[in-house]
Length: 123
Image 1 (spheres, one colour):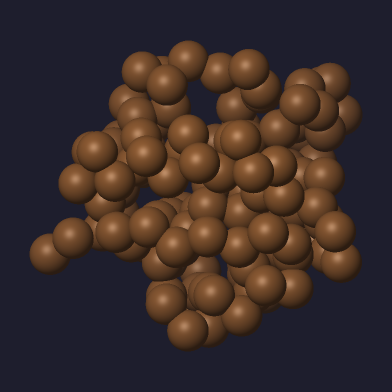
Image 2: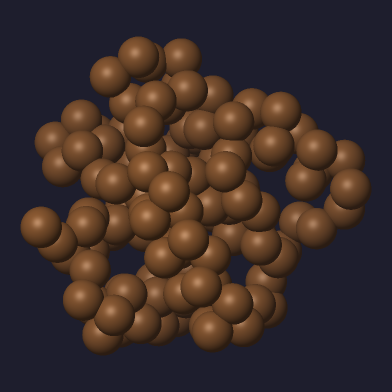
């Protein structure tokens, strides 16, 4: 069965490149441009994994991550935080809130695909 990935980012250039990359790897892809839309997509599409930016309109990535981890039905969703915020405090906060992985922008697409595949294989 095809794995579903939800890309949550408000930067169109990043969304386009991530969407292309994930589809090329054979994943089914959905996109949300803000935190509230992300939670609606999670409810509707039940993704296997999220690529989640932190700096988002309406609800930030930390709030989205916390909301997902608080819902027992969504706990299996893997969360990869993709962000320009790479300070140790942000990494620690993302991990503490339940992110499965944390990658800072700019990131290697090869590393991102490896991370996504590893998380999905272990689920």
